[in-house]
Length: 433
Image (cartoon, rainbow, N blue to C red):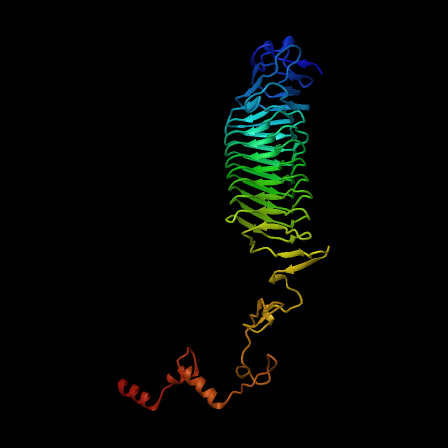
């Protein structure tokens, strides 16, 4: 496991810039030693660092202007060196690259500068010695970053550190779990700073230290989660904090924390849509939206806990196409009561079995739709409603029907009208003669 470092700036494939005149290989730990290297080939190494080895100065940068891939395993990529802007690995192209590595950060590690796509296979983590305002992975334009791995902030001791930052209008897709920090104030898993899109397939959890979110939707962007959303167990350790007028869409279970964390928290006119169960704890709500103009749409079920409601919202609308069940707590008791929407009321007949216009049900909230004919319109002896039909056909009824049907096609009346008579026959003979 030898160390390899550039002795001057230049292209990666140029052996003359590297210590020992050897281009790094899969067995090497690479230290940039405050030099700038341009990646001009796909590489496989043990690790890439912008720390220093020996007496060199920490820092350095790896620039990628074309579509070259990186594999740095098993150690990964670490920016445990000098402060840089955005990331010490910068991808400038508009194409697509793949990086297979675990990302560790003390200062900024990777930056997607342009509109290209960066595919990352590996976890993205901020370690405990991260400085303030550090970022591990930054999407600084309208590009795309796809991550297959977990996003964590396990031990950050300083504030405003984020494992992933979407700083403009780009897109970040994660297949994995997102977890807020457990130390310091403000280490969030992901921050969406503008009108970009964050899509998570996995679970999102708040941190365990004060004000540590799984995801901070800080502006007008959109957050989509397919998975469970659970608050952390510290003060303001929300799983998702909707800080502006952005949109949060969740398909999964949303659960409050056991201390002061909220599953989804919003103090603005942002939009919150949840398809799935909302579970309160005795300490907090699953969803809290304190704006009087916010839009909040839920499917339920809603599970309260003691006197704590599952949702605390001024405006609530239910999804029209989802069956909804409400479960509320009983004051002073561990028991619950289930309230059902009309389509879930049990023990009552279907509307098609109840006379049209008749209201029924526990709260008279249902209306019958069955049309029942009058017995006088039903043939005698035929069962109708709770009796039998009484209609009897009379001779005059038959005559009246025939009269009204004389002009019908192929009717008896029409045929009789066409039958020859003595007068018509005489007229025909006279005309012939």
